[in-house]
Image 1: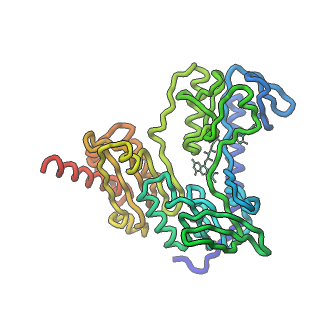
Image 2 (image 1 turned 90 degrees about the vertical axis):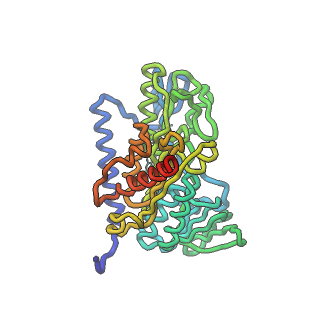
Image 3 (image 1 turned 180 degrees about the vertical axis):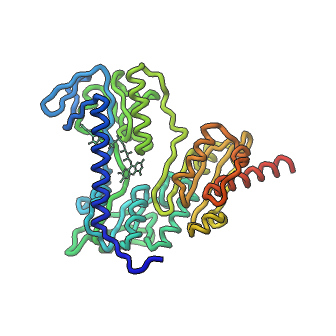
Length: 389
Ligand SMILES: Cc1cc2nc3c(=O)[nH]c(=O)nc-3n(C[C@H](O)[C@H](O)[C@H](O)COP(=O)(O)OP(=O)(O)OC[C@H]3O[C@@H](n4cnc5c(N)ncnc54)[C@H](O)[C@@H]3O)c2cc1C
C-alpha cells in the first residue's frame, strides 16, 4: 500500500524525452557503423531516378520509400483548436478535463493514460463501438472497463464544432439523444492516420497513390518498377514492427529482384490500454463473414488463479479455430500481459499447431499463460466431446 504519493508529470515527460533522445542517438550511431549516410532534409523526386534534398541531387538505380503518416483531419469546424497525439505526448501541464475525438487505438490509449493520472475524460466516437477493427468481445470489454475507470464514452456521436472559450474549448456534439455541448481544457484529435505522401512529386514520376496510400504489389513494388515502398506510407497495418518488416522485404526485393512476397497473416496487434488488448488473425465476425466453420472458446481472467492473485481479473482469452482442422485462425486477449501472451498464439499459428497440440503443453503454475493453455484445454475438451460423444 502507498500513502501520500504524488505524480510529477513534468518529470514523466522529461524521462520520455531523455529515452527518445538516447534511442535516436543509438540509431544514428548504428547507421554510421554500417556505412549508411544520413542526410537531414525534405526530399522530392525531380525524375524517377533522381531526388533533390536541400541543394543536393542524388541519383540511384533503386529506391525504397518509407514516408510515414500524419494525423487525419476530418472536416470539423474549429479543428485548429485541437491537438494531435504528438502534442498530447508533450503536454507539460495536465488538463483537468479533456475530450478525445475518435474511439480507435490512439484515442483509447491516450484516454487510459490520462484517466490514470486523474484527467476527466470524454471519448466521442461516431461508430457504434470502440476499436472497430477488433473482435466485438474486445470492444465491449474495453468499453465496460473504460466506463468503470470513469471515462465517459459517447458512441454514435459526431463532433460538429470546436470553439475557443475564455478558459479552454467548447465542443459541440451531435448524439443519438440530440445536440450536446460542453467545455474542456483540451481536445485531442484521434480520428486516425493517413499516409504522408504529399510534396514528393510521386504522381509526376508515375508512382500511383491512392486514398489508402502508395499502391504496391505483393513485392512492395510501386507502379514504377525500380521504386519500392513500405511502412505507414502504404497504409494497411500502421505499426512499427510491420514497417520494419516491410522495409526488410522491400529492400530485399529491390536488391534481389522480387524474391519475397509480403505476408501479413501473423501480424500481432496491441492497444496499450489498461489492461492491454491484443489480437492476431481473424475476428469471430471476419471468420463468419468468410463462411468458415469455426469454434470459439473463451476463458475469463476472473477464473484464472494467478490473475486473481495479481488483482488483474478484467478481460479474457478467446481462441478461434477451424472446426474441422482444429487449426487456430485467430485469437483475442484483453487482460494482464496480453501483449506478451499473444506471441504464444503467434508461434502456435506459425507452427500450424492444432488446438489439441496447444492444450497438451503443461504450463507453469502460477503464471498468466495458464489462461491461454486453459482456453485451449477447454476448446479441445469441446472438440473431443463433439467428436467422440
Ligand atoms: C501516438 C502513436 C502511438 C503509436 N504507438 C505504437 C505502438 O505502440 N506500437 C507500434 O507498433 N506502433 C505504434 N505507432 C505507429 C508507428 O509509430 C508507425 O507505424 C511507424 O512509425 C511507421 O514507420 P514508418 O517508417 O512508416 O514511418 P515514420 O516512423 O513516421 O517515419 C517516416 C519518416 O519519413 C520522413 N519523411 C516523410 N516525407 C519525407 C520527405 N519528403 N523527405 C524526407 N523525409 C521524409 C518523416 O519526417 C519521418 O521521419 C504509433 C503511432 C502514433 C502516432
